[in-house]
View 1 (cartoon, rainbow over the protein chains, first blue to last red):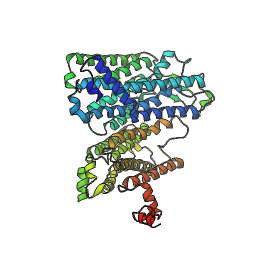
View 2: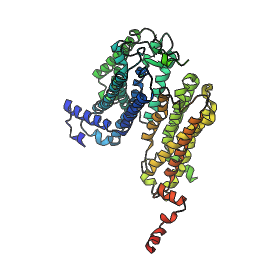
View 3: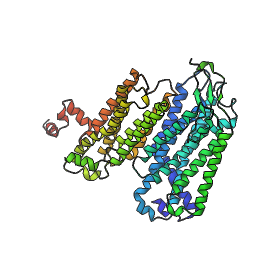
View 4: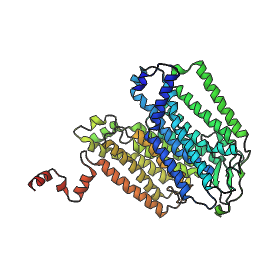
Amino acid sequence: MSSLSLPASGLAGQRAMAVIEARRMARHPVFLLGVTLGFVVLGLYFVLVDDETGVPVVLTLPILGAFYIGLTTVIAAALLTRSTEVAIEAVATAPGTEARRTLALAAAGIPPFVAGVVFSAALVVAATVIGVAPQEWWFGTLPDWQVWSIVLMCPVACLDGALLGVLTGRWLRFRGASAIVVVALIAVTLLGQAPLLDTHGSEWRLWVPWALFHTGDNPDGTQTLIAGNPAAYLGYLLALGALAVLAAMWHDRSARTPRFRALVAAVALVALAFFALAVTTGNPDNRISDPIPSRVTR
Amino acid sequence: MARLWYLRRGVAWPPVLGCCGAALITALLVVRWPDSAGVLVPGVLACCAGAAAFVYDEAALPVVAVTPRGAGWRRRLRLGVTLVPLSVWALVVTLRPGDVPLDRPGWWLLGDATLLLVTGSAALASRRRVSTPGALLAPVVAVAVIAPVTLSGMFMWGTLYPIGDFPGAVRTVWLVVAATATVVCAAGLLPDGSSVRTWALRFAGLSALVSPSSVHFKERV
């Protein structure tokens, strides 16, 4: 009911709507379940996976946050978006357009983003306190900006999960759409990069929405850092998220003004530019670390 | 005839069949990329489980629940629809797409246990007057089914989806899931107005404690 008393237009009204959507996401049980599972699994990893050298394969761990928080956020955001459709006739008479409501829904990405930042901070703090092997791909063996870029992929993936959920909720009306989107996302992410990881063209995997930069321990105790520029890839992920919001707003026919079309084209170009940068700069080839004796399995 | 008529019109066939179709498409991906079967075959299961989650979706639940046949009849009948995603799963495991060495009895067990658990959960939700449990259950189940894949590479306790041999410990885990699923299904199919406790007491031969005549018994005492 509070949304009906909002100002008809302007930044204040938009901000108030955004705060409401962010609060709805922060209280959504599916999102809370995902956050809880993500942190529990991370905690279990630190407790159970012991190694005399410290925390193993730290740079693979952001995937836990991206999976548990990011994927559940896709579901929660899609449900939040669809929930307003139940009262579409009442909502349609309220001030503001569907595009404005969609833009406000994008603020539902704030809680997952914050959860992802806390997850990454916990990861860095734990790795600093417990320690890592000197040969491990981490601060010291990699430039700091590369480590931070890979670690920050987690909160960006969580944010993008919410934006993808909004896009799903706006365009896909059939029941079970978010279930299909989740499975499709996993299949595309896997099949888009798995065949390329061990090849000379491994940097071309970077078009997928979650690219691996670290493959974990190899049987001979070494670790592989996959080619590409993680900082530019981070920019590419952010541009994909912006495109998801714009594509969701595109659902409102009245929003498709020439200015809006130009904005969509500009963001698409920015995404392509970041992709090109990610592929052509950074590590040109896969890098193999020095072997960690305690991790040799053959 | 009434049963078939109801199933044809009452079940939300588009999402059920849509998820089954997605499962078959994912199985085709396994044919093309058998090396990724460790994630894709659980993906097939996730789609089948998503289909099972929609079996109890009924927009007009408050109306249907008070018809002479009752909600219990409806819930028992709908359980049979689970055979559709179960058949898709059984077909995929039987055909072993991409010649992936799936241990058929083991994978049938884990699929049956998962689908039964999902259907039972949907039945329980339907019993609690949730008219469309699939909208929430299907995506959550899809993530939950694939989640163990992320853990298997990180922890030393192995995988719940073994390609090749099916270890005894994994079989035990899935047997526990199957037993839980049976209990959840039974609870979901209980007639309205009765609880699991009531039925457990009846089963134990203590019906005097729960039947209406027990009131007179108490009065006499």
